[in-house]
Length: 277
Length: 252
Image (cartoon, rainbow over all chains, first blue to last red; front, top):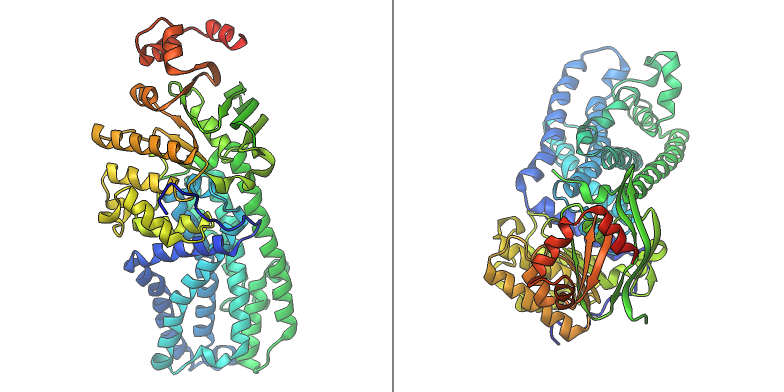
């Protein structure tokens, strides 16, 4: 066999896991190629956990049962970081393609835009795990608190926040694709728009009346209320969980729809050719 | 299969009020090497982008390897490929990693074997495990060619494949492309500003100006038609003609 002979290829399918795998591999290679980026992934969750861990120890003297609930703030900060990392994981991997002016190479191949979006969600999961697990593990010896003791509810919270962060990441990436690298900062700050109304560190009831319905429209609000129910009352609120899942279905659908719509627009306006540093 | 690897009919692309490609109708015969020539802004890159499915035409038809590119481009993308020095590969990935990723995207059954073949054929062995960003421009061009050939495409679109290369490396790339086309029967469409390259490689030339194909023919035929000594002189003639003449030529 020489390089001029025909190369055996798999039959093209509209959806191919191997293409998603190839893109996932690409992002893993990118991550592996820079140890400073891997360290950076874990750095902020660790710093936040340490800061809020000491804050928790200080607040334990309070009479409020909400504040006294062991590990409330540590759990909140770790779960917020799941959402934040999931969002950033999608957006940064997307920006990697922009920075390397690589979209034309990718989309001259049989890769479909929805496969690309799925690969972004996959690498976001990997980046979140790398970022959050060290902080969660370190909280055990530092503050005698293990978030893992939450058990199955933790898995439910994690998955919901991953999906919500990813959905926001897809929408934000679409905006960067639409408006160019001038909108790059959106990728970093977009998720903070929902942080104040997600009830991360305080109950939704604290918010003004008119803002509460907006908060309840976010899956994250249901997740953080659910987290408080587990930590304070020791119960897993199935109603909050179901609400979060249903809202996530809507948000993920919307995230994909915006992403695919803007991609279609990019093919019309020639944006796949122009993007770069 | 159609005798044409590429066929367009009244292919047009406008961006707001600018017409980048204006109703071009071209055929590129399968198994040939054809050049797309024209000055900056002539519409070459826009045409190639539409042929690759990266850009949706405003109107007109494109048929590539017998498939309608507007409606079903994914049926044919696995059988074509492209290379351009202006479109990078991720610099932090090694050459091997980049090729593995594209082998996956093109659905190769035996990616390692193919990468080894190309590594030997294009003399990549010495730097295949180095980050792509650390390579010289000649090495990067060979890597870009390896990526473009990863699926042994039946149709290869190249945008200035030897731009900014030293004469030796440029000659090496041209020889390889000649051999590839001869051995595989592949069709190559290349945009180039190097008239020596076009003279040597191409059996047909499409001359573009202001979004239109203003002339076409074999290099020697065009030289004769314009009463010039070289293809470069023909290129300059066309580039400097006024717009009325272009309109008359296109109408003919």
